[in-house]
Image (cartoon, rainbow, N blue to C red; front, side):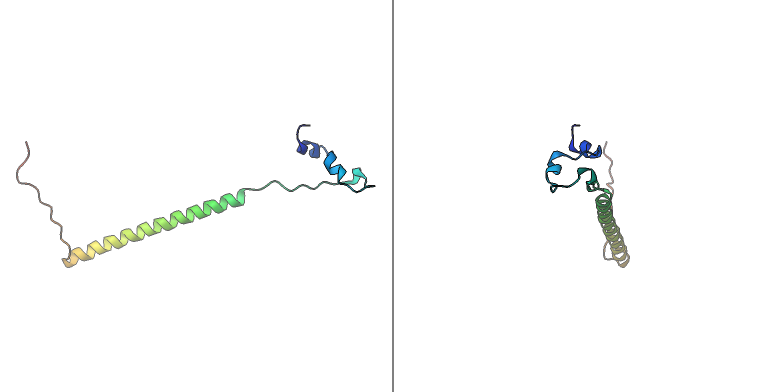
Length: 94
């Protein structure tokens, strides 16, 4: 057995744990409780939710600014406040 986990999985009590048992304890009656392996589903979902929320907020700000800019240009051009004239040159380059 190369790793302590293999030893515990096989049901053997490692020597360092055996030394911690009080005298007179029957080693065959010992149950070793190990913590469950860490589950990464929660932190990954939290990170994806935060990232998606931030992207949604940035998208909503961009759409709002676009609508405000389009409405401003429409109002100013309808009231005559902004005029844009494009002039083409009368001679052509050869």
